Image 1 (cartoon, rainbow, N blue to C red):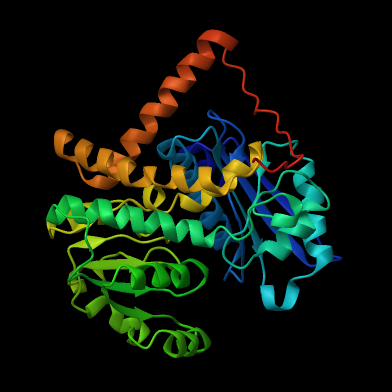
Image 2: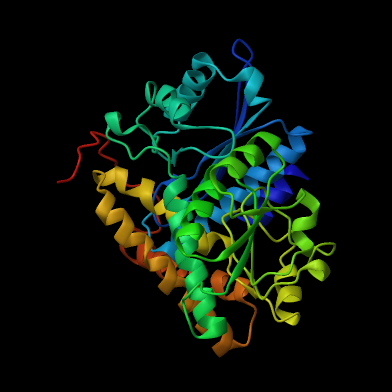
Length: 371
């Protein structure tokens, strides 16, 4: 069963790491390195079972392959998960042990922040391996990628509005924001600057209190009620699988566009959205801003270059919508097609010129700032 799933999803390598001395249980999945070394964040969650963690890391790493391909980056897809409660287990020792394990992969996988991890954690990893991005600016990194992910989501929403309404303007638009954590919070700030109406929710009462104090203009609803609000854009920014058989009939929007990964519980849910006339911005295409930002660290970080690159999310989504129309397919399949076209071309080039051998790019991790 385990090997069948890996084979079906096309993974190159899956690694299990354990260090009982510091409570580390981790899985690193490398999906595809056709375009370059696999890059993807490290998610720290208290999974219900090891099987749930494995399923999550397999799906997320596959999504990173497609995300990098559509974004035009010379990177492959990978992901890491650490199993356990981050509030209880986080320590310098745990992340340094994780870093030592990553070092044994010789650069095939590069990690970064994700749900449950932050810049401080990545700094500990960086003490043991250069194969990490999203470290502090004082270490030559770019820091928290969340603001850049949110920036990209705004670009993606504008592409959706242009497709649906022939205007990028948020004037008169209502956005329902699900999840106000790292990315969701920055997205909220950006949306406020766009002068649209915002309805929001989060499972954390602390975050809700913070948002109420800072943004009195934001309407707060209970977590489960967010699916039923009348809006133009439904924006999922928490965990995945929130678009499913139960929630799709409840949606009262014309666009689904958010930062969460694996938003569709099943791929065919994208078809169900289309049948209801709801435009879906494929998650790995619209939430690539954070990946774009940290990828620049590999060559010497420059924020202006990052911002310029993130603007391409608008054009990437426009291409996806055009493919969907021309080929008469749902947008989630159009995004896959765009990614697979790039991957297929690069595989043929490698096969022709280097006999099909596969090795990731060497990485200069001196982290010199660009001027």
